Length: 157
Image (cartoon, rainbow, N blue to C red; front, top):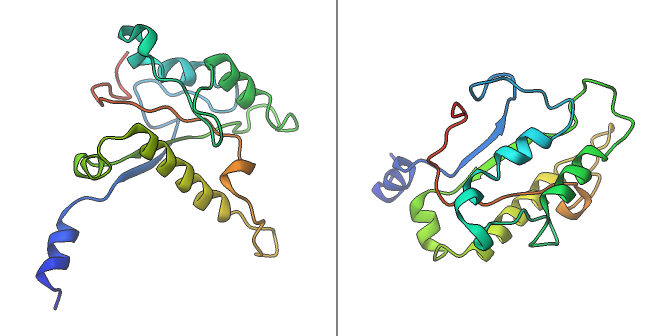
């Protein structure tokens, strides 16, 4: 029998974490085998009305990464990748409103959560023999962007 306290916990959906499939998600399929330019531009959608208060991209060790540096960092990573092969992946890490309330809607704490998540993600990369590569988020080339409102859908223009 499941205790009531656990039932209450299980009744809430967990944080939404998803790897975006460029061929299935969104109005128009895109390829992740070329430049990340279109995705990077799309992720700037909330900045149009913010002026100087725009939200910068961030990385594992930098809170203010410029758009051009994101594009260069991703597009110039791993030059040996064959044409048409995946060059980048898009992930969504979206806390529930009560989870945001728990951290006081603190952007710095949310960024740290993303960095901790990327440390865990990197730690799961293994060698062919199954032993850990002992990677951390700092070993990955990744950039993230905070969104305040989820009023855009992948099917929006």
